[in-house]
Image 1 (cartoon, helix red, strand yellow):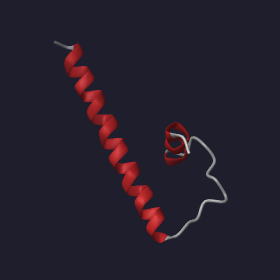
Image 2 (image 1 turned 180 degrees about the horizontal axis):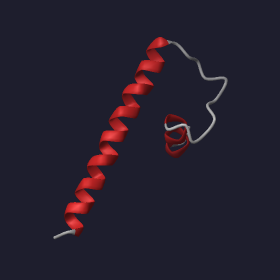
Image 3 (image 1 turned 135 degrees about the vertical axis):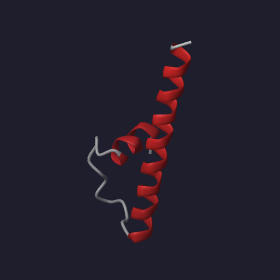
Length: 54
């Protein structure tokens, strides 16, 4: 699975694969990944803004 396809599924930009297994642990792992990706993206935006304002 490609990185961009997986990111699209995480952020509901793409339809999820119906053949993918789903249980409580996998859903928890995906929510944890969503939160960490959002924090990373926010931090990168903040760093870019700080670098551009120099």
